[in-house]
Length: 347
Image 1 (spheres, rainbow, N blue to C red):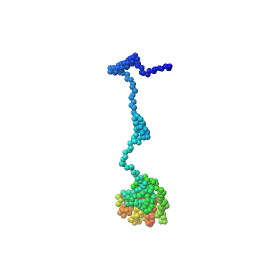
Image 2 (tube, rainbow, N blue to C red):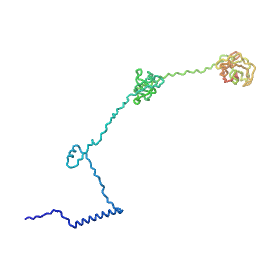
Image 3 (cartoon, rainbow, N blue to C red):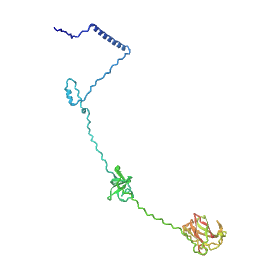
Image 4 (cartoon, rainbow, N blue to C red):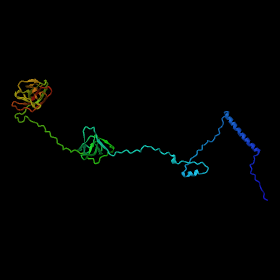
């Protein structure tokens, strides 16, 4: 007959000794806690037991597609967490009533206006960018034209049209709009070069011709030359000539011939009264060069050319036959120098 074994599954009751041991342990722990508390109350510093920081559990939200939301909602028991689509979480821009800005028109043409503060009513227009070009017409103050070009220096503007031609106007005479649009004109005409004048040879100045006033007079020809001129101030009221005719080769001997006389011009005009009617005498008197003077003649200033004594004089000697006996000799008087002493030497 087979053997049967009875298994007892009831919870065994701990023996009394074991329960007592547990109670002792609990009592010791309670005592230790009490002593620690008393230490704190009595001011004794207790050693702090490090504790682990509490971490707050923050639920995370996972974006779920719309198709999966229904499955999560119909799932059993658990809390259903629905995430809004990203498009719904973004705030749509607020609509405004400000109209969209419109584009500012860009200028495409440069133009000029003839200044209105000019002195002239009309301004010249030329065939090229220089005053060396011909004038083809004029434009009035205040007139406007589109600019088609300029020169390199920005000093002349090209435009159309005056008298049916493209013209040029000086930049200082106009006010320009949109100058940045102006480009250098094509085919700028070259500045005309004035024709070179044929050089005119200088008129030759004839060499002074020496006139021999004593040529052909025969005999011993002209014997006298003017050796000394000594002007002096006499107030300028008259011209007073004091002349001596000498021969240096004879020890300045005074010629006592009564036939010598002089003729006189002032500034190229004949002085009347100084002629053959007054001749050298035989009596002599003293002067700057000694006792050598024996011809004297006075002419009032009012009877002289110009009405005064100052000027350039031309004088020459005549002999008793009314023939020249010297070449033309000159002297000059200044201011009131009306008295003049002259020595003609025959040597």
